[in-house]
Image (cartoon, rainbow, N blue to C red):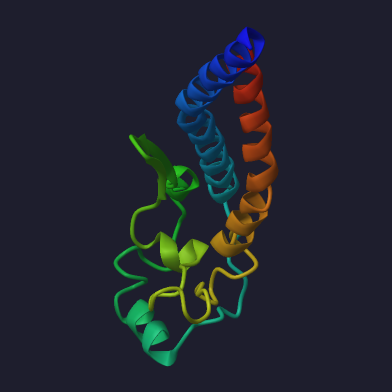
Length: 159
């Protein structure tokens, strides 16, 4: 009888330690995933090709009328976008973000509750990493990495 009680108590202790370790292990995996997406998105795009593939005539006329939005034509790159994507960890999650107008350059998720297509300006397609492609590639690895983190947490809890 004592061995059964001891076994139940031991299982209870292990489960409590495992549950305590679970959030930290999962957060490490989420942050590592976000950092890999960040690294993939911060790759500098290829130079523009001509003729420019404008999204609309309105966009073309606006760019030309303002001398490429005040930057002059031809526009010289500042390469500041190569470090635009940032990762921030907080209590219950991780945020991956980039400043406006990164959506046009890197792509944006559907606006209406995830319904509809992802969008990336035609000017940047094929030249800059596309967020959907890079994000989905990393998210596909997430289940296996979380399972591995859980195994590590379980083994640590048993000690």
